[in-house]
Image (tube, rainbow over all chains, first blue to last red; front, side, top):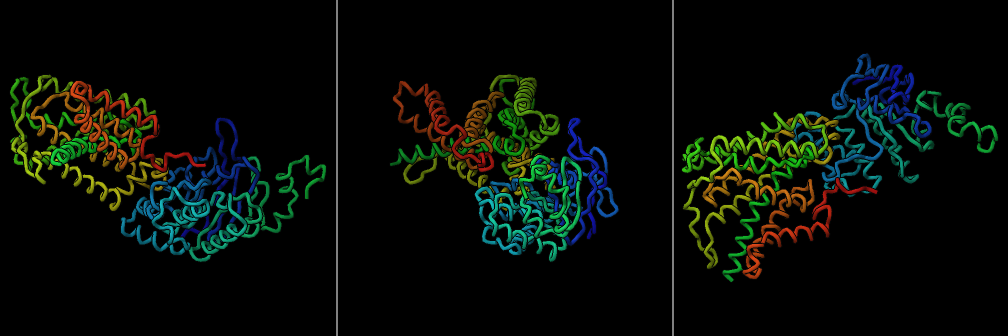
Length: 247
Length: 304
């Protein structure tokens, strides 16, 4: 299994607008790496680049020593890099089980193998009861867990979660945190966690990158990030900071 | 009682034909968002594949003389082949264009097929005698039902069951349903897009061939226009059923068949020649009641 997924000086420009500039980051296997930043900082673009949904304008995406920047999304998935989406994006007219199955089939399994894998995975996450429900009718939290299950088909080496806790209650976020740790411990995945829920990120991640206006402005352990002046600045804005109203 | 039974069989057999037609359109619409107006002409093509090209009034039956166990697979293969060719030669180039462009392309393809037939066979309808003994009535619960009606209904049900099995139980069926709902996403997950689309076209072509076989046995004529009417009704059925919904298309096909048959019975004799006007009025009423069709797929719903 691959040990390291990395962005190496990646830049993305949309019609002259810079979404990412010279982003360099590393996601090690078996650990949870956080990516935080204000709205519009380029977090989702970053995930898109790492998973082949967006071609970088400059720079490379490296899987161990291998340059995978040019690969289309489904090839990237085959190399063992999976992701979830902000809005779940399950197949609403398929059952939960079929949503996982079709991913397995897409990755080259037979229907029977995919079905067995899906059973095992749903069981592992603890949502076997949802197996035959249509994905379109699921509550928000369940939908997120199914999306994670779909991404985990065939044990990817890296899992990129794009705001998995949005709309979750505190308890649900705690449960998610436990699930993420089980993924790193038992599946040995490297996880990249993008979240607005800073509490969840500080609690779950081993190390955290902070992105602002398309640039990495800080990297460190949760404690270091908590204490960082630069991060506070990016989040609260210069005005509030100058007036000393917050924190 | 026997009269009611007669009407029920009429309705079911007409509905079967419409349902199979609608299914052929809905399958392609599902994976490509293309309303394939060449579908009716594919039906006509399948019928003419039984004849030797000639502009004479009398049909020179060629493949049509094969025994049924060879003729049916042959015609199904012709339908599937033509349909897959249309995808490779025409529709593939329009895959990323907007749906209106694809629709116009399908109209154009329909004309090409129709005028190709016109060139080889002339526009005169030709009579073909295919399995005419199927027109003989059989007695069911005291009602005398033409055997062909019974066969039509049984065939349609068998096809529907087989297709359901295919879509639910096989990996290609699963891939097809995923692609029908969100093509881009399915592709990202590694579903092989070209294969799924070709398969949908092949199935749709076989459905066209099945309809063609039933039509020609019923009417005993081969006419280059013959697919036009059923194509129109099949298209309406897919719209009423909810574009993109396969069960919806089948249900609406049977519904239109039933409405048309019942109106034929209950309308006063003076109004019967205008039956279709009443049928289409019912269609308009349905669409006012449910503008997105009776069965809207979950995926088409706006999520809050």
